[in-house]
Image 1: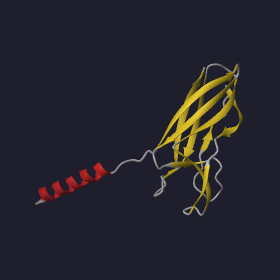
Image 2: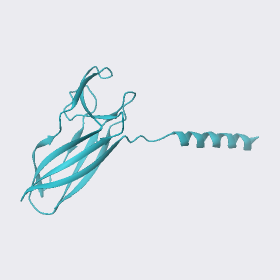
Image 3: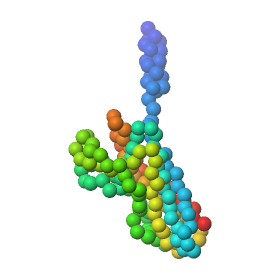
Image 4: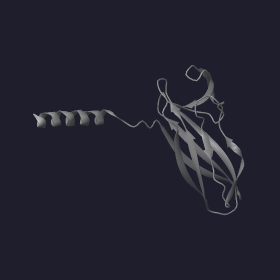
Length: 149
């Protein structure tokens, strides 16, 4: 009898594991382009699965977690201005009871930099939250490193 019960629980556990998946609806890619002898632009691209979106860097307090791109202070480069983004879609979301700006399908963020040495690895971090029409995933952080030649 014990063997039957253990077998039953094992089947249930395997079945449960087979159906549970970790959702990763956003993938990130990075590139750098030299724009002058001592300047470059870093491109940070998010690609979202169908039906998913991430939020703008400019979401008001009380709303969803906004996308934040940070670069640690480093002696080989400095930032020129803020990280820029294209025009976002803005709509009222009842779950947050406010207008929010977001991106679907894909978005490219850009950061201009002044380079003090060559080549240089530019490191940073993206924090973001992905949502679809049914759920929002917990905020996630992704570290990156880009070689600028």
